[in-house]
Length: 140
Image 1 (cartoon, rainbow, N blue to C red):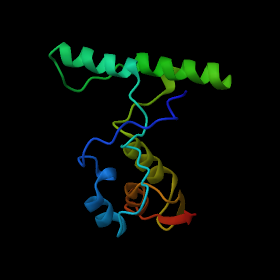
Image 2 (cartoon, rainbow, N blue to C red):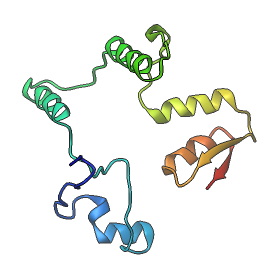
Image 3 (cartoon, rainbow, N blue to C red):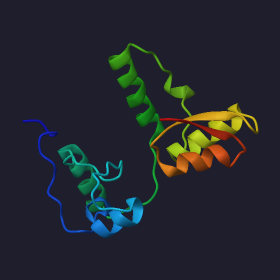
């Protein structure tokens, strides 16, 4: 049996995707099966839970980022998985995916250019395309 064979139990209505009122507010009906990135139907891996416990138990929190270690891990993964050599020294850290995509759109497009967006998509992707003056080219 794999982790994809059984979904974690629904625990009350604190999760947006399980709350009929929220579903109706977003979709006009609660008769939908929403698939959201932030609401996974997979159990949390033990290694992730252990890492979270470690951080909670050390009693210190805040922003931290070990870019050298993370970039080396990403480079190693691409080498093993795709036989692709990436130099971790060429990686550029960003505070998030949206910031990185936004910068690329600003740098690589001009006002009025059309930028492809596969839909359905996270609503913020549309904003980061249109804010610098590009237009959305929707692909369904």
